[in-house]
Length: 197
Image 1 (cartoon, rainbow, N blue to C red):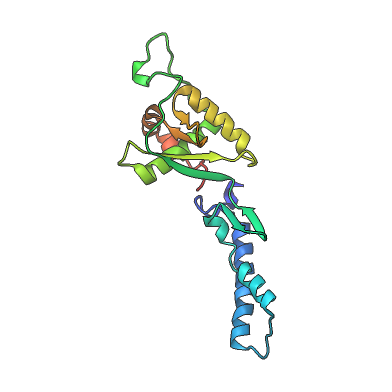
Image 2: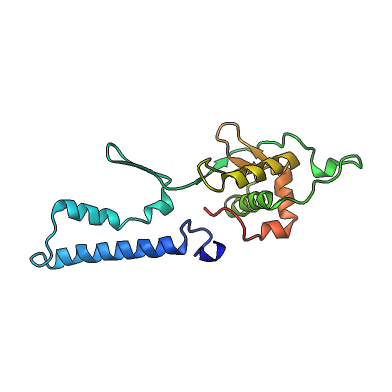
């Protein structure tokens, strides 16, 4: 639900943040009482380790994968981001300036394509506003519930020439045409519907 999102960049919804706060708070309180009153609050080492781990639900905000060999192997994110040192050129469409009367301008993007463009435009401006030789990139993992919409949006944006996909990482990125398109369309540039990172 969009209204349940606390912060678009946080990666956790309100319920997850509240649960994490309470689990961490209670765990820290028990550990603090054990340290302050060791005779009244007794904990064995195993319980102390479990309580210490319970104070760290915020790791999901920062790490995609947490591995403790032989103990746990957890993936915490459905999306990943990256950087391309040089933009991949658009494969299927000429730049907008080169369009002739026989080639109609691309139709306005659908909601999934607009979300892709809004995400790429937002983080491109945030990280590389003054460096047009680099591109911010991302992808959504196939197991994510957003994957079908992501794939649809990327397919449409690639066909229009706004987005390219790296054959090595499968991350999508804005082409030069896509960068110009986002910069010239405030409804995409300022959209609140984007993939948060």
